[in-house]
Image (cartoon, rainbow, N blue to C red; front, side, top):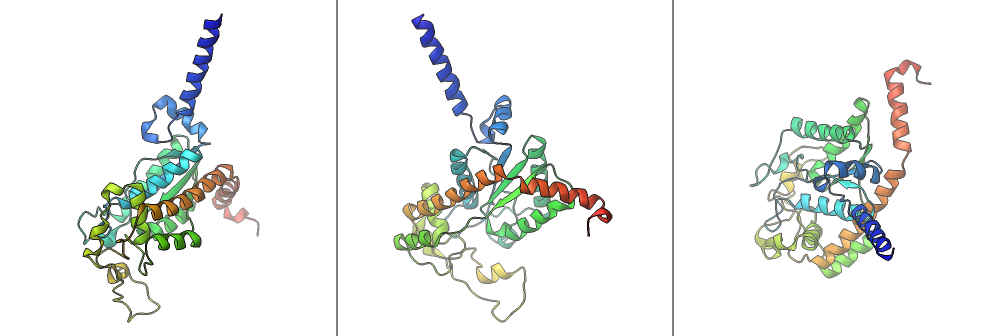
Amino acid sequence: MKTWINLSILFFLVCGLQAQELSFRLEELTAPDYVQAVEKSSKTCILPIGVFEKHGPHLPLGTDLYIARELALRAAAAEYTLVFPWYYFSQINEARHQPGTISYSPELIWKMLQETLDELARNGFEKIIIVNGHGGNNAFLNYFGMAQLSEERDYSLYWFQPNYDSEVLERMEELTQHDEYDSHAGNRESSLMAAIQPEVVHPERAGQQSGVDQDRLKHLSNVYTGIWWYASYPNHYGGDGAKANAEAGALLLQSVVDQLVKTIRTVKADEGVPALQKQFFKEAADPLKTRQ
C-alpha cells in the first residue's frame, strides 16, 4: 500500500513537471504539445522581427534579431505565450550599400509577413503581438498594421511599442556615457547586446568608424526623402558603442521586458480590438447601412 502511494505521488509529480515544461518556443514543440501550448497561451503568439544589417564595426549583423527574440523569450517565461522563431524578412533598403545586408523586395517582405500571420491564425492563434527590433521597419509596420483593415481577418494584430524610462537611461549613462547620436549600434543597442550575447560584441572596434550624424541634407526643410538615413549615417552606425557594458544593458533589457509582460497580459484579456474589428468588417461589407 505504501509503495502504491509512493508510485502515485511520483506519477503526479512527473505529470506536473511535464506540464510545467511545456516550451514557449514554437520550434521546440511537438505537434501534440503544440495543441496544448496554443490553449495555454490563450491563443496568443509573439512574432519577434529583426533583420540582417550592419551595426557599426563592432556589433553582429543579427543584432536586431538577438534583441527582439530575447525580449520575447524573457517575457514569455514570465507570462506564458508562444514565441515564433527568428524572423528576418524586413525593410532594409537603406543599408544595401553595406556588406552582409539581406534586403528583400518590398513585395516579398509584405507577402511574407501577411502569409506568416495567416498561417499562425490558421493554426489557432487569435492574437498576435509583433516585437520589432529593427527601426527601419517602423514606417512599414505602421502602414502594414493599417492595411489589416483591407479585408476581414481571423486574428487581431498588436504591435508592442515600449517606452524608455528616463531614470533607467540616466542610470545607463552613469555606467557608460552620454551618447549624443545614439540611434543605431550606439550606446543603448551595444549595451543590450553586451547583456544578451557578449561573445559577439567588440566594443574595442567601436571607434574604427564614425557614428556622428553627417547632416548632409541640412539645406532642405519641410521635406522627406528616402535617402535621409544614408545622408546622416553612411557608415550605418549612429552613436558610440565604445563604453557600452552588460550591466547597463541589463537595466534597459529588464525595463522593456517588464513592459512586454504587462502588454501580453493586457492583450490576452483584451476584448475591445476583436469586437471593434468584427463591427468594422460588418459595416465595411455594406457601408450604406452604417449608422450616420
